[in-house]
Length: 485
Image (spheres, helix red, strand yellow):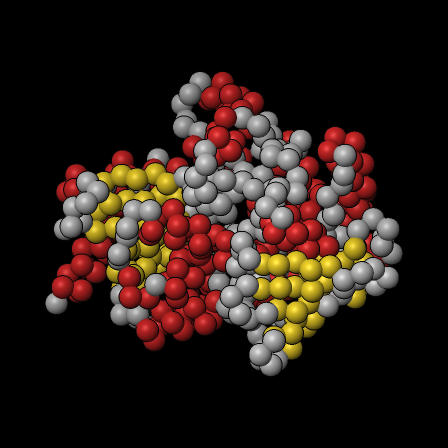
């Protein structure tokens, strides 16, 4: 019997090794072809952009020349940009607090088979090596940015959009462009629950994940909260910058700073929120942690669902390590293939957005037609109502770009906050493995973690909304009781 089990174990191991080898071989071939396709699409989009918009938008594909940048730490900030063979350009950062350090190098440094071809394409676009110097002698840091970033900054400082809104490849429907008809520079916020001004009420902020919207919460949890809960809690669900019905500026780099400040302006300041609970999913967990660090005394409880946390081994470059973990350039499982397309290929992902997001009304109609309205399309709407510029920059600047900050954020939660911390994760989540949540718990030992069987990245909330609503109500009630003691 033991010999039979041993033979079965060896056979299973052999099958796994063979399957892994086949997957790697197929993946190498497929992604080599995709590298070539992305390079070709780079040229195609430059031609189309030039024809339609009279100029092309620089991308993140290409070579480098030296520039220098000086950061002045007093009231305003000045970046001196000096290109080889050209006069010095001055960019004043007065209307924005954006810092070059907020930009992830994974936007323009993604090793591939076509990288040598990209490096030789200096006539197409230009990547720049940047030196940042602190005026007060605070030290010198060397990092890299692309000419796209410099151009967007110049547009911001000039007080004008660099490119039209919407661009030709973006959707122009009422839902996607409603923000352009309003003078408010704030996010779309769905507010439910307790009556504003009730001093006995508490506040809850819901932050959705990547390529989603506030409907991820309002169509699932909000209808399932008890009447007593809605009488006590004010519920705020935001559409993040670039998604849903929120603004989608073409000159934004969608950095952590921009996302967080928009949440502060749209919820905390506008609705005079003094303290609040946070519920965040996936990418939203990073924004939640950033808010916790900025407002530690205001947090009443923190609930993280499938947090994208990958501890970085010593000697690894944090941003690149997270990029490889999140998007391993593998064909199987298919969700890894999708993540790799979104993370590694600027122009292929733009093509996908062109086909899906620009035509989301058609896809929503077909979904309703095929299902005869048997399913609600809020997930489809959330998945499609964004621009490529928003998705591309948010993915890199938030998930990858904050890789060297997350440990510090978690240390703040562990050492400076006393509030309840709860983590939920689906056992079948193939996008973000459950090890991510266990790693968060290792940084915050008091955190309570719940792994839900037979649930994945989405169904951890969707299709178990009633049970999850009860769990959240228990968390908030317990947190309120603890704070009153």
